Amino acid sequence: MRLSFGAEYTVKSASELHVILIFVSFSLLAPSQFSELPRNLPATQITRIS
Image (cartoon, rainbow, N blue to C red):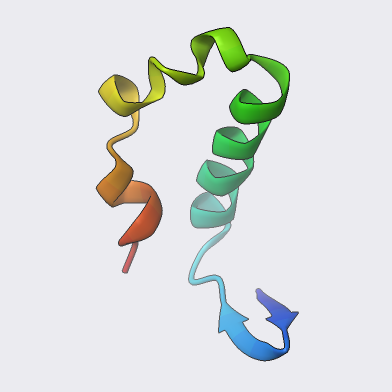
């Protein structure tokens, strides 16, 4: 799956995209729970998926 943002960015798997969507969903829909995300989804999984 590929998404274009000027430069080509390749999403390596559907699960990677799914994690990103969950992260965004929490930030938008559950701001009160957003502070709890680092315990469940370490930032390294979001920023350094490879």
